[in-house]
Length: 342
Figure 1 (cartoon, one colour):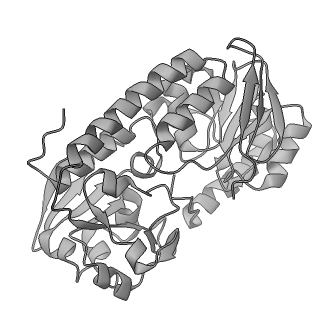
Figure 2 (figure 1 turned 30 degrees about the vertical axis):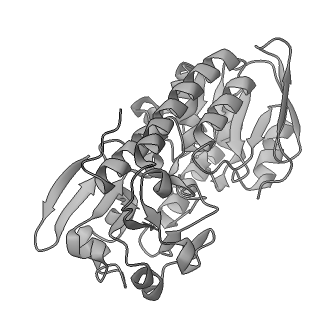
């Protein structure tokens, strides 16, 4: 993490590494999806958790039968052509060593760099059937936020298996997601190895912060795009438990934020966070740090006075993917500069 001097304000800390939180779709995404619709119609270049999932297979490998969170059973016989419907699944597939099999991604798939050049199939909450089908995938991966459901049904009607995972939240989510994706793709051993490595990184931070007595109050503030609702993230979002694991106190639950709550000056002032965590998108949407500090309530916080505005790329902060251990380390180091993490 590097800190950039901000005149008369302090420091803006940007995460060293590159989903919106459950997940916000703003005007820019709508415009991009509209462009995809036009491309798909041209023809030439078209490119809430319910049931618990169950996975069955025979001695690992494929085929695999998976009953998703939407209650639909999918049989996966081939993982040679994969389409992912959100950025964290793209990142997981690449981390599992199957990046070369990915033939289409959603607009949130910005990491790794190779994913950015792949054909786009919409954005998670505004998916399009035509560009998904055009990639001739052998399996499509998403979760319960992959919508509209009519698009999912349309893809399935062509015989393409679409796997819908539940919504994973909390510090255990990354390893669980990795294991489930790996099982569906027929490589459970690889998934177990990666999941164990990621969990080890997470556990190292949790262990290091366990004995910390002075925990600074912190808040996660999210803005998807200019003009969209500014949100405070609390429990029942992808951030649940992460601030605590990094050695801070999440002020959102005490402010009444169960899930995503529209930000109010009163809620932010009442929590008096020493740190505010946000994303590149939020800073850009307000025209820079100065604009972000003009959000009602933000500029009056101890975080603003001290310059403790921590900025990360959206997927890195909110994806709960393979880099979550690195994120927690970044946060813990920011909260506790003298903390030693093995």
